[in-house]
Amino acid sequence: MTKGVFITLEGGEGAGKSSIILRIAEWLRHAGIEVVVTREPGGIRIAERIREVILNPEHTEMDGRTEALLYAAARRQHLVEKVVPALQRGCVILCDRFIDSSLAYQGHARGIGIDEIWSINRFAIGDVMPDMTLYLDVPPEVGLKRIRANGEREINRLDLEASRFHEMVQEGYNQVLKLYPDRIVRIDASQAIEEVFLESCRVIGRRMKEFGIHLSN
Image (tube, rainbow, N blue to C red; front, side, top):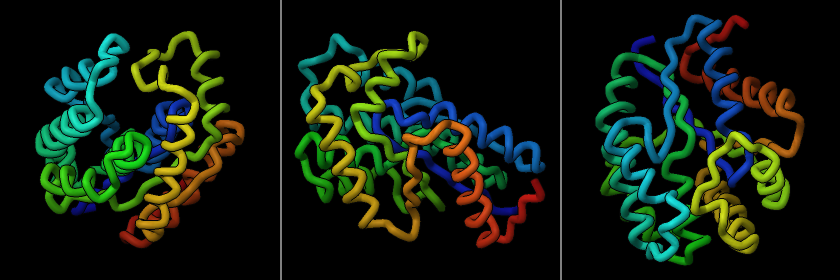
């Protein structure tokens, strides 16, 4: 494989992205694929520091546009320092969140506007977009219930938002899905984790064939 493949996982809080992405990585590595797993905001030192600022539960006064700009800044550094070099090496990138999160969270749920957030992020990412995106769709009340039941998961500033905010995030993702139907595939994340994983593998397997990559397992 000479050209890497950029795969992102998206979804609201409690959708199960972090668990599924690790299982997908194990599956791909077993098939002989070199995989890089990363996340946004974060993945590298500078972006992780920005993550601490964005998600700190004490930073309740943060303005929505400030939040959007911080996400874009973290995204830019993460892209040039980690994602692009890995793609140039021919790796498969599995990234927990990318630009679609900003479109749904800040663009729609914060009310800034999807077009405005796209403009900010177009400057940050240039022409780098995911080759495929799995949208793990879960009802907000189910996702938040999972978070409350998971004592090991960090509770961040976004988790503390009112239920209406999380409903608007889901609305935002549905709008983004309509904008990019060829790239984004919706997966019902309210299913058992094994079913979500198997469906994710089926989607990735089909898309990989389009890039000339056939998974044997």
